[in-house]
Image (tube, rainbow, N blue to C red; front, top):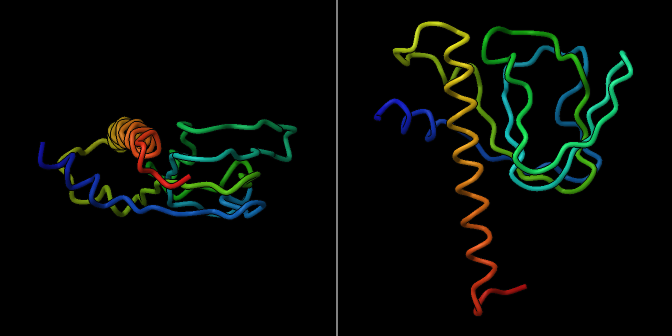
Length: 130
């Protein structure tokens, strides 16, 4: 209800240029991300090396507690992200940190799907500028 709307309003949008670092392994994090457009490469000192695309989320551990990032996330093309800070979840009646993270994740995924549908509708319209 109202808390969900409040949380959505607390989200910020961010554009990340190609080759920019979104998260750096070992840094302290406080932001959770949902990738709305573009793709990212996730690498770590433990050997992780994967490419992720639209609709994925990462950094959810930051909503639970201030944690060191376990991987580096780099934009491999221009990206549009929604970001939510742990501070934005403060003051909501949900008390358990794990539940907060779950709810935030679900809300952001819904926002991601809605934004993608809206984007598809806008650019499918005959008057849309390519």
